[in-house]
Image 1 (tube, rainbow, N blue to C red):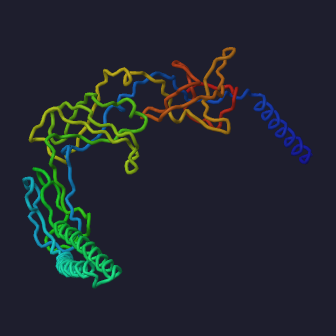
Image 2: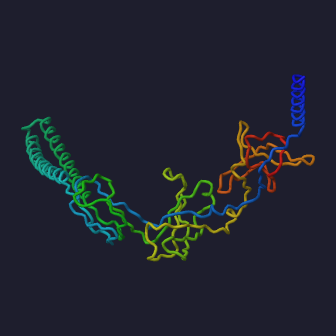
Image 3: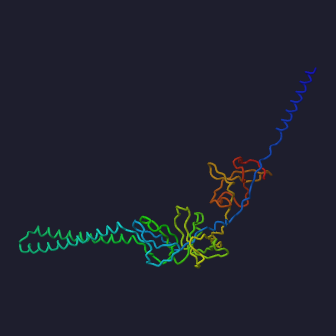
Amino acid sequence: MKQLIKIFSLLVIVGLQSSCSEDKKQEPRKPKLVKYQQIGLSNNPSNTSYSGIAQKNLVIDLSFRSNGSITKFNIQLGQKVKKGELLATLDNVSSRLTYEQAITRQNASKSNVTTAKSALERARILYEKGSASLSNFEQTKNAFRSAKEDYESSKRAVSIQRDQIKYGHIYAPYDGIIAAVYSEINENVAPGQSIATLNAGDTMEIELGVPESNINNIAKGDKAIIKFSAIPDTSFSGTVTEVAPALSIESATYPVHITLDDITESIKSGMAATVSFSESKTKMLQKKLVIPAQAVGEDYDGKYVFLIVENDSMMIAKKHPVTIGILTRNGFEIKEGIKSGDRVAVAGLQTLLDGQKIRLQ
């Protein structure tokens, strides 16, 4: 009897569990909860300001054109120099030795010309008297011609070696101020090695790099507002004087030079500057459609988004192709595919399906 009661109890429990499972299976599955954002326009004002460095409009790296050890170094940081002032000298031992050898060769060549000329005069007289053959006279003329050519060559060698000695001296090419010093006395330097930098311009300019996406918005003659962190609460006006036509390999931006309209002693080379361009330009005020970067997906067919559309009182995620532009701080600029006011999913794109029913978060 007890055994029958146990069997009956087990059957009741199994039946109840089966009934619960069927009830759970019959419960309708809720649509996926999706986070979304409504798309709007942005003029992206952050793209109109750039960081730059102040510097004179004429910056010259001073260097020797020959190698050697520096024996004179009249260069100090911040030093004012005058055009033609001797700033540095090399020992130039090898150049001086070569110059002396060239002088010796020139003197010998000059003596050979004198000797050859006398020989030619004697040969001419003997030939006219019939005491010398024509071939002997021609040989003497050739010897004189060779002596003259050798002498001219020796004079050119002397001139070249004289210049080599001059290359061991650095004179200030313009009036200016020494902005940087890289060498010191008794240091060995190579040809072209910069030993100092001379700021020689009469105006101050700002050099900055503009990305490819904005370079066509800036043109020569545009006005700009410049601020320096070292000179707070003060703004300066400037004018774009140069826009590079090619990308800088070092910075991957286009170099732009802006000349300050007014010069003041408070602005010094090397100061960090922030440059803002006038937002009155139509090109800079053109508003663009911007979408969050996380709302854009990519597959074999290209870029896409999931539009949130309403169908028979239900929300559906619809996969939709888009064409994007540059990436801004607010997201991707949209060229084609969606319009202002559209709603797009901004999370979980990898788990969404085209036409899937959703709920909005």
